[in-house]
Amino acid sequence: MYRLEGARDPPFPGTPEDYINLYSECWDEDPDKRPSCANVYERLKNCPQESSTDGGSNDEEADNRKENIQRKLHALTTSIEEGVMFVRALCNRLDQA
Image (cartoon, rainbow, N blue to C red):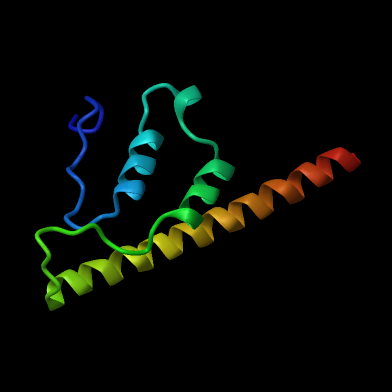
């Protein structure tokens, strides 16, 4: 029910603002307002790889959070790249049919 009612967890501390804006747009109730896969891919490539400051803390925990976010961002970007390649291949096959 939590998600069905549109509720979302708050951003994880240190998550880059550009990344928060992007995934928030992907949650839009209106599918026509959500960014396309190609747009998501391009924006992810341009998202800063640094976490936002949360009081200037550079301790080990903050570094671990940053590395975790970067790993997830890389995995997501890789998945999107694979999806784009699949769609392109599928479109090419349909064009040839």
